[in-house]
Image 1 (tube, each protein chain N blue to C red):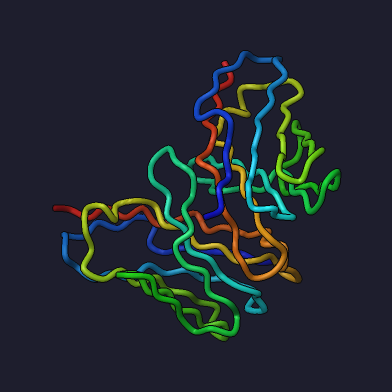
Image 2 (cartoon, rainbow over the protein chains, first blue to last red):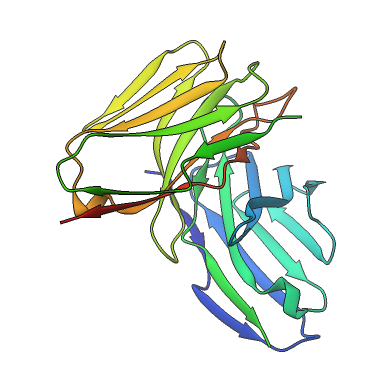
Length: 112
Length: 115
């Protein structure tokens, strides 16, 4: 079974802090994704990576950056956390082709 | 631009009832369509993945159908149980691409199965 692991289930940070959210997948997937999920807005794509060191902006990249130095690891970085970044963050991965998308268990981030 | 809509937003049924959840998408040139389940405060679990060449997929009490021509997919749950209570989301690839599985999500149907 595919396993996508997010390092923290819950995280509380202060406004202005630099925040790292980590995601690791164990199935040699080419593609990795970061989504955020907010009530009433659904899942929105923040960033997407299709290969090591390759990234593409999603629908809401402002205030975020990403890093993919190794194929299995995709990090989401909040350079200076703000209260409007309080949300559930979901990491996912996939192969190229028809295999579908696989999610981690999510990180609930609160920025105070 | 691909848009995915799910109706109803919420549904409450008594245990044992068969039910149908609906998903509509605007761009029918899709590569595949995926149904997920999400429990409160948790990540998404993949339920069924239907390829564009297929009309339906089954897993246990779940059956998902795909009608590209009408831009619709349905998730049928047979003999519902309280443990089926969760949010169900469908997702389709964006217009013009799908091989990377960069999906567009509906806002989900919140299902409550009453004992």
